Length: 280
Image 1: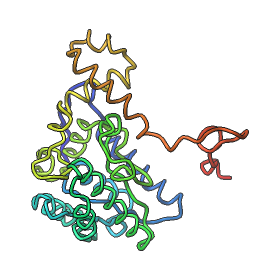
Image 2: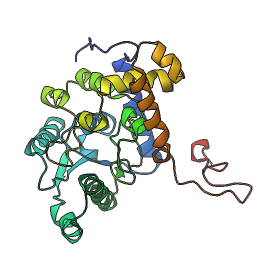
Image 3: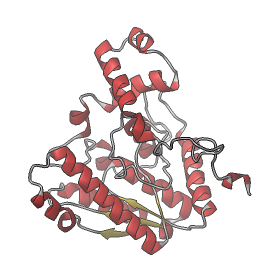
């Protein structure tokens, strides 16, 4: 494996240690629930490919199931890259086309725009994954990274739905570093990030800035707790910093469970959480 992974400081990570921590996290949390397997959606992108690779290290290839869920307009390269990962990792996989599941709804509602269509497809994929989860008695493994979470760049109850997520505290820049360290296929690492929700869609075009820009700003605002003013003083354009902070604020609802109005002494997810980790 490559020992020299170039990532701009201060986003550099110790890839060897991160792999140990994340594979241990997957193994511990899966076994703790009484499950022995995981299932995840494989899009052919870097995030799902890395999640699958970490799961194989944690549980072995026999206990990881990849599910590809193309739509009729999906880029054929996405499916090809997902299949490349299943062969590379030696994991079982299924191809479950979602076109027949969502197209009747689109035909009944022709006014639906591309964003709404994308959300519907993401939620249909969630339904498919959780059905496979039930059939296989396997936990659903998430694939979203920290950058996507902070920017709310996901579909609520769609691609963000999972039982556990090994990538949720890794910025996109760090995902690339870890993927290189684990020697994932170069064509997957270097391809333009895309949710593949419509023809020609790319993440960075939709966001309006690059992941490298987002990660550098988010690390200052979130991890280092700098103010917007301080981040701008660090050398970033004010319009970029303000825009990113606005997006983070506006998408906070996507990063929490539904709020419950407090009436009793112990309210779920406020002052009561099941003490499973205490061994009780």
